[in-house]
Amino acid sequence: MATILNEDALPHIDPVKIDAAVLREFDDEDDFIDLAVQLVVEAASYTIIAHSIMDDRGGWERDEAILGGLMVRLYKLLSALLDQICQRRAEIAQIMCRLAFETVVDIRYLVRKLDAELGDDFVKSSYRQERILHDQIMDRIAERGGEVMPVEDRMLRSINRAASLANLSLDDVSTKRRDWGGQNTRAKAKEVFGDDLAYIGAFSGMSQSVHGSWGDLLQFHLETEDGKRFTPSPEWGYPRPQLLTSMAFLVAATVDEFFGYWDEALQARFHPALADLQQRVRTLVVGHEHYLSTKEWPAIR
Image (cartoon, rainbow, N blue to C red):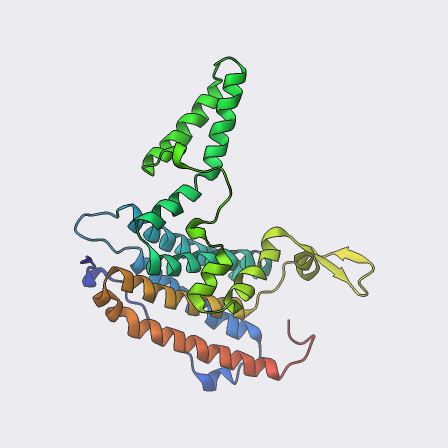
């Protein structure tokens, strides 16, 4: 479709300068983190442009709104990630990164496959809990012979209002657990990236931080010398630049593909800048790896 994008209103996005020679002089990982933060800010700036795309109708239709809403979500998650990184809170930063990765996968999967049927499936899957709650409330009302408590009335009206905004009947929503599109996140990521590596590194591994598994406790919340006696570790974990460089690279690729979904001319307009951003991320990664090669534990945080 033809998009409306006021060139005069576009923010000027300055590319972050990454000089390989300068990187070789860095003697502290904070130097790499600071540059990586700037690269994520640059990538996030393009998500703002992406979620500002409209046409002459002045708004998105439902399926377009799925993609647009996901891009807004990605921007907010990047903002939260940067907040936690700048506060040097690795535990929460990893959770934000995992959520952002899933959003990246969803966007890139949808721009390749989105049609009316998949859009319906995406929307219906998000109302499973509402359908379950609705049915439980109705069962309790029936058990009381039809008497409706005020809190139940408010909850039912809220559920029905949400379904109405989605142009959805709760009768069409299944209570059985099922991934939208018939594939879980791992399968979607494999289709997007061609293998499982990105999923394992950015989603599966970081799920420990989301769920508070033993790996998360041992890495961030406990201290031990021998694995037999443990003490609490209330200090925040120190983040690594890899979280940021990975996300900056993935977001640049995602925005590029998002632009292509809306308008080939739009993609052509921004592709050179996004490709250049990815190349600068690669340069920073190479520089950081060289820095790490000169260190041994525990000099590496």
